[in-house]
Amino acid sequence: MHELGITQNIVAIVAEHAKGAKVQRVSLEIGKLSAIMPDAIQFCFDIFTQGTVLEGAILEILEIPGLARCQQCGAEIYLDKPFGICNCGSVELHLISGEELKIKEIEIEELCV
Image (cartoon, rainbow, N blue to C red; front, top):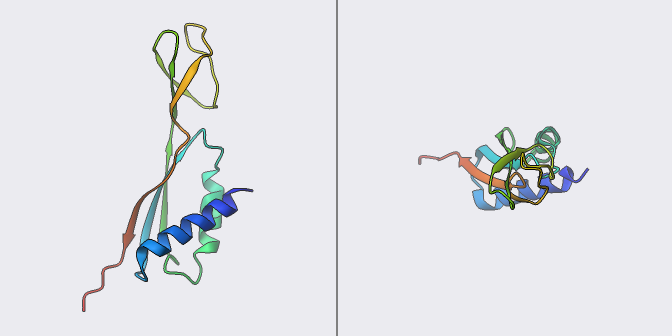
């Protein structure tokens, strides 16, 4: 399960950017063609954040649909797997989106002193 290592890296990156501040929310973008299972990321996130500045943080995952452009006719088609066939019959597709893995936003607690 590669989501284990991916989640460890996400938690480490967010903790580093938080610079000791309590993290309230983390927003991720995960492409549907990335072979990353959002449910597994959520499960691992809850485990790896224990005892860190991310403990109790809300994890929001936005799944980005797969989108490709046909090299033959120029049409854009949605994909649910990393390959497909255009309506014109061509299999020469250029992926536009769907392979993302991004930390989109980090919300931290602001302390007033």
